[in-house]
Length: 316
Image 1 (cartoon, rainbow, N blue to C red):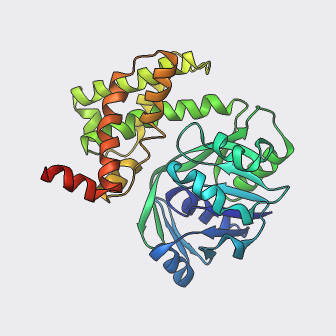
Image 2: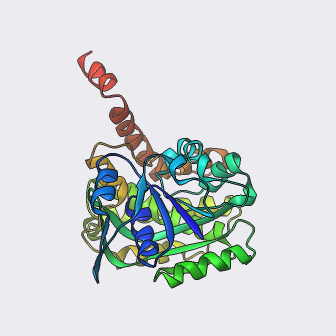
């Protein structure tokens, strides 16, 4: 199986690194200094248990890779549309596209470009990031992938991909209700990413402070109520499970949205708490915690995208 990885960051670099080490025919799309390091030195994966470096094929041009059998889509949610157009040379009639992104609507976006029959949906549970060009650092428990067909069937292609992941030493699970899995992860990251980024604090501090812990739980409960309105059927104890998962993370864990803000990069707020606000309005579900998080972080995105606009307003 020829595999392509669209986005070689903390997710694509980590799981792609394990696939490369297992000898898979795998090709990475990256850019900038990270790409230069990958081409010159290879990909280094640093984990709690082991470090390894693999020589890989990395490029900024999908045309150089050509059509693949499996395309792992690992870009930021706000780049999905642009990346889908860019990835066209890697997709042919039999290509399977597996989205491993944050958010609940990426499969829908990709289906508009490539057709629903090509798309598998998935999510990951991992604490990883680009530590330096060419180096992906991972902490906490081993990364895990949960994925499946949009309609829930246990298809031959899903079984084949599952075996490839397992043979590469990747913790993987097939779900017959991937939408529920995506929403459970959505509930978790809207709370953890939203509150941690708003508070500019690692997860341990958010959990230890009674006031921010209350906001965290409240943010998650709004997503739980919204899921019921949307017919997803998350269990009543979904918030308790998400809080237990949060407590299992490294206390120094900084979510990707907080790291993006600290590095003055556009965040995924629109796909996370922003999506909660939009669906809340459509469904008539009050979401005050998510609304406050979204309002503040939406402004931060505008400042990052247009610093001239922000400075001009301050000069008035």
